[in-house]
Image 1 (cartoon, helix red, strand yellow):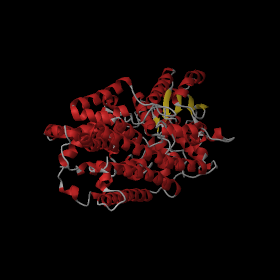
Image 2 (image 1 turned 45 degrees about the vertical axis):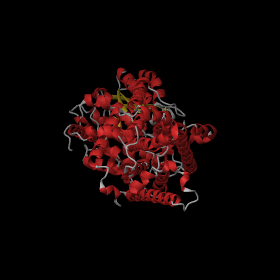
Image 3 (image 1 turned 90 degrees about the vertical axis):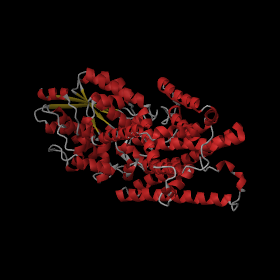
Image 4 (image 1 turned 45 degrees about the horizontal axis):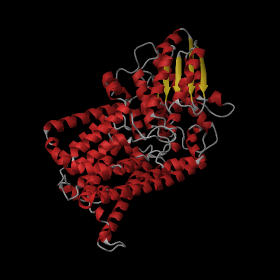
Length: 250
Length: 386
């Protein structure tokens, strides 16, 4: 798999110019491509006001007193604000550990009507895999969530599970990752492939994801990179010009 | 209908041995070497090969037992085999629990607070272990043996039917498969969800294997060698390969028309998607056409390592699961460089071959009367392992 990812990274060639993100994140830029657009975000950017709602489970947060500020939703807000001068960026979060996709769908309508976001960033899949939720039910929950967001006038970006090498032989993410990819494809929403990105980092030695530690430094840097890359994905997919992925190089 | 030949078809052992190697490689998470395995190049994977050949050999061995010694004796042997596999499964479970308990005690990382929740079941082992003994709680990658146990437990009446009216037996198996899709039958699992390999679906491949062993393959051989069938099989394999490439190169996905994507996804492994069956059958057609039964190379030394593994499949399978745990342990504790992954993969296969060879040697010694048992004690194994 790692070899395949490297090959993938090489074959896909260079992406657009990414100015701000820390250098260590950039190795994963090529995994960011998406053929799908975010029209509501495009509109919000034109109106100079972008509201994002992040809904997620335990892997969207970090522990500790400064955890919220260092977790990727806050880093996303920072990265968007940096790269979109003149745009008022606001990221609200609803993050609680141990939630399945179906549990998050239940709270979506209230959250969406309260915050009226242009974009819903939805992180899910890990808990469903851990509890071995029926994959059909998982896909249906994703379907419902995306439909709810779309009818509330919000674009959607899906985030899949983290790459977690130590627990890899205990959590079967495979089916859930495939289902997420498929649902994203069906609804034509971008997928932020956090799993492949983190796997690439682990393979290249960018971050040591194997280490047993109570320290937060690696976790914070990982979240920082995720925030930056997510911002890149959102901005690229919201560009009003022609889609970023047409002239295939392969 | 009688088993068509008394001589064991070495192709079965060869491909089952290869399937066991591929299952071992696929079961080590993040193994760079598993890009060689067939699941990356099409819809089906080594599981289909393993289940089909297991059905084939089960019919080959127990079909003869049922004709010679009757329904009761043959059924007892089948159930004894199912029991052996159950014991093997519980043994692997003990090793798995040891690994989990170790990880739970030694690993801490704030990045993975959520993922570590998977170890919570250690907090109530009373429920978990009980559910595991009932085959409802099945750790990751330990789903094949429970499927095999259930398929064997249910095999005696099916074998009886296969020996009398093979077409009706195959038809009833296909009907069960269709009903499973219609009514979404599956067996519940613990803590939630259903069996990863739905027995109501996978029985079809097992029974089809058994049907082939009992003369079905001979009836089919005229069709198998027709140009049209071979051409269709090749075309389908190329199609599956092209689709598989879009999984790794997302840019290629734009070349898949939407209606094709809507029609084929999701490709359901749990319920043995028809696309997977067709992919397996295409592979089987190509194999049967290009690898004749009396191919001299089958007796050569090159294929011996895979063949000997295929002849002792239960032992090799269990060893493979154990080695894949161990391989993952090496990756996390020692090194996860690509070179390590290659070495672990090659070493693992070498150990599987060595142990299979040792078992083979010991069985022969036993049969010659050198072992602790008289040779007559194990007549059911004349055809080799099931």
